[in-house]
Each structure stands twice: as structure tokens, then as C-alpha cells.
Image: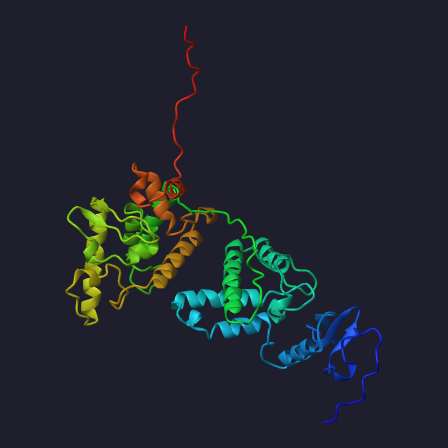
Length: 392
């Protein structure tokens, strides 16, 4: 196929560009390079900016090659792709890699106001102000403007993206893929803390609802996994996270009470037995033995291998399965009017409720006073101020 007619000389094109070597389909106007793309509504074409006047001829060829398929070499997209092949990335856990992939997609898929994707920008053109605006826009959101879709406000995701970019560019510097770390000067946004702790009436109502749904036949309308009421009791009384409830075993059951298996550097302790705790543990053990026998699974001899929470097939319950079951049950409780939408609470909120209701605020295992105050939502009762008597 022939190239077509020769491009005419344009005196407005920057002088460092050899106009005879420009790639096809690339045009110059108003101080920018653009291409013609199909209109989103299917009628006509629109001008889409791909580079500014400082772009080199090699940059323009790389941009057009990338538009034909693949990522632009030297771009943010390209840097994330080669990072995924590195040992630093492959040594991470599957959960961490999944989180990094989410951050990479969030950053590279960010749509700039001129219609370009952040992932298409060359790394050397990125700066602290540019990335700071990206992080703040992800945190505060952006309404739909013209052809630009709206961006919901996600401050937690914005901070995760900032941390990912900081590590990505640091890795790129060590391996010679970039010379600076523009994410190093990014200031993280403030996240609003929301414990989603239930009040006592909401907690009691959802617990009664969970017991009603758990008593129905499995896989029928209105039923829920039968272990959820026991999970609520353990999370509240022992002041545990969801993952800590999920990984409880028979080895944690001691003569005095239940020994916790806390994460994030918290200190383990033993919660004394109560009537509710004994009933919850006894039910979970009975359900576990019945499910394992029904599916012909041998019961482990070592107590640390006997998990309290198991699935319907008798296998150890995964944290994702527990989270999904909890969310389905809470959504159904809201739909049936058990609690209002603004009364919705998280499984982790039961730990907040348990610490708040405890006399000893250190029962949650936190080693710092700041964390103890974070989980304690009680309002202290203090004496009124009294002027001291004057000494004669």
C-alpha cells in the first residue's frame, strides 16, 4: 500500500521536528499533536491530543506505535508491565499482587482532561504536581464534564495508589527504567475514620435476625450460613477481627477461656468463659464434626489443625467466604426492615463495640494508648470543675 501524497511543510510545527519523517495519522494544531478518533456516539470523528509541543520525533513514533497495539515504551503503562515481571513483584503474596494490580489499573486508567490516559504519559514528563492532582482527584472525586466520565470519591484508594506509585518509581530508579521518583513528594490525603460500630439495639436486632435465618434449611429463601450467629458472639465478646474469628482452632480453647490470635502486633490475651461463649463454641464444634463426617473427611488429631469455622463441605472457611456471607445477611436485614440503611455496621465494628463495652479497655490487645482510644467510643463521666479554696 502506498504512503499517499507528501505532507506539506508547516511553518508552525516546532523546528526540532523533521516534518518529512512524521508518522501517518498525526497532526499539529494549536501547539499540540493530535489524532482523529471515532466519535463516541458513532457519528464523525473527534480530535484527541496525544502530545504537546515538547515531544521529540521518537516520542511521536512511539505514541503511534502504541496506538496500534501494546504499551508505549517509556510510559507509565510500560513501567507497570515490566515491574510485574520483576522478582520484587513475584515475591509478593497473591493478595499483595492483587492489590498492586488494582492500583496499577487505577493509576494507568486515570483519564486526563485532554482525553489522554495517565498510563500513556512518558515517565520523564510526570512530576509531583501532576501526580498530586491525580491523587487528590481520586480522593475528592470529579463530576462528569463533557466527554469525561465522573470519578467517585475514594480517599482510601487514592492513598493506596500513591503508595504504589512511590514503590514503582523507586524500583524503576534501581533498575535504570527512570531517573526520578515523582511520587516521592506526594502528600497523602486525610481519610475519614468510620468504625461502623453498631448501637446495642442494632446489634441485638441483627443477631436475632441471623439466628432466625440460620435456623432455616440451607439454600432456601431467607436462609443464611448457620455459623454467622456464633461469629457475631465471638467477634463481640472476645473482641476479634473477622480474620481472627475465622482462624480460631481448638488449640485456642483453654480451661480459663478463649485465647486470642490477634494480628497487627496486638497482644494476645485470654477471655474468660461466659454462657454465650460456651454455647457458640460448642455449636461450632458440633457443626464442624457433622460436616466433616458427612463428607468423609478425617478429623485432625492436632488441636491447632481443627478450625472452628468450616464450610458446608467441611473444609476450613475462607475469609472471603465469611465476608460474602456477612454482607449478604446484612443487606437482607436492611431490605426486610430489621435495621435502617444508616444503621448498617461492619463485622469489624463488633470489635469496636466489644472494647467500648469492656471495663478494661486494654482487653482488645492494643499496645499503644492511641489505638485503645481509637477503639473506645465511650463518653467518660467526669466531675465538674471546682475553684480551689484560697489559702489564708
